[in-house]
Length: 356
Length: 243
Ligand SMILES: Cc1ncc(C[n+]2csc(CCOP(=O)(O)OP(=O)(O)O)c2C)c(N)n1
Ligand code: SF4
Ligand SMILES: [Mg+2]
Image 1 (cartoon, rainbow over the protein chains, first blue to last red):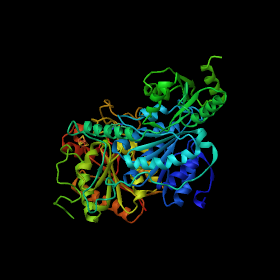
Image 2 (cartoon, each protein chain N blue to C red):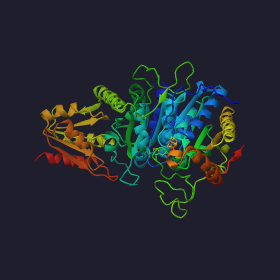
Image 3 (cartoon, each protein chain N blue to C red):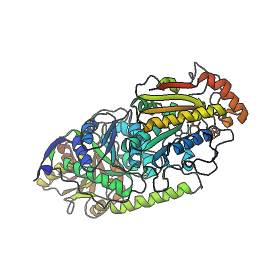
Image 4 (cartoon, rainbow over the protein chains, first blue to last red):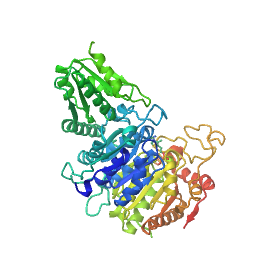
């Protein structure tokens, strides 16, 4: 192992920053909110060290709009926040999506609704995958489950953003953000050949002036055309980018599903259930938009039931039902407000499925 | 210098501005200054939400259209990444002094090396004449049919005065485009605000008192009178800061 990839010990929020910087992020704007404060704090010195620009914005609204401007200059850029702050970013996210500019947005989710609390939660799933801002648009939403994956997916997020010219959200939570775990900081490997950035605003020397805009008044069908183009792009992303992990699903009677840190807990329960001889598996979406339907449809052929575990009142569970097309019952275990399931609790739910 | 030729920085296209509107004059002055400083090919402008939103079809330079009031933040992102480019915002009073107040104050306070052209027509032009933060006491609008009331809506925000206390601000001047003499002075101020940026002096803002005959429900001539006799009293012209 060389010096560059020797294990490092950081908080999850810092792991995300380190990956962003190594993937070439050059601009970050953010605003303090627990449990993501380590992100602006780390970026404030680390990004400068890497020749980038850090701005502590006056609000999450300003931060996302600074990112809008920075993205238009063609540099890799990022903002982060936690739930209430992500709500404030929604206007900007809608604009950036409409303008088809790349950027990365991290949501270190906390309990809600309202000011909620500062404990980890997964209540922003709908907002992230169904579109929290106005208009028909989609974000690519990545749901890392471990520290190591938080590192690698953050790097990939910048590649997806550039490749599809679309904002990418990293959907984590207060547990992943605050956890400290050693990771191997693999070197950044771009996933795609760099695409020509022919949209950049940097003054029109030697070319025609460019416009970045989201208003389309004339002719009347102009905006319909824009929407058609976006829909085609989202269809392409859906076709190319559904990521998931299937774990012991082949012979499973019961398939548990969750994303992010909840999937780690569920996996622990699945392993203990297997020790007891129970045929249980796990499907873990890695992209929650686009949502990976295939593994659920496949599992519905053999499994009797699904159990979805979330740190919310039940949001992803709806996508699971859509994915497996209601072929099998889908049960839900979870509650919002900063609660998290233990391995024992999930195991108990699994055992409930098996008559004594 | 009097120019009768259309500046290169503006396309040869008709604008959608109403007869007697001040936006066309203000944009013409910005275009002339960009030409004179020879910076068209390294300029990025930001279009506001307001009557000037379509300026991206009028300016012959790179333009980004921003969410309502967020131009200063968007411009911050651009300028920080491309400090060698000339970045200007062009904003109405609703945009800059109501929904975008926080962005305005903090961008100014950080001393971002930007040029802000602030068109104060004391009204929400684009949405049909509602009260603006700069609407004057007693002025009737579609949302203050009985006139703006001091104890109901508060008085008009005076942006130059407000920003003048901020250390980060380099230059503030209030001008008008209501008379030929004023237009000459307005151009000088706009030129200075761009030159300051080229000299890396920091945040410069020019407030332009401007006519909106349509939403003031006046003829163009009455609108000029209104700026002369009403607006200039409430918004005195002059330099508010020059570091
Ligand atoms: C978030 C948001 N709120 C409201 C509007 C509607 N809106 C469009 S223009 C405008 C007011 C513009 O007034 P001003 O900034 O003074 O510009 P003017 O048209 O007078 O030049 C408003 C409220 C919008 N587009 N976006
Ligand atoms: S409504 Fe007023 S500000 Fe808008 S174009 Fe007409 S005159 Fe100008
Ligand atoms: Mg106005």
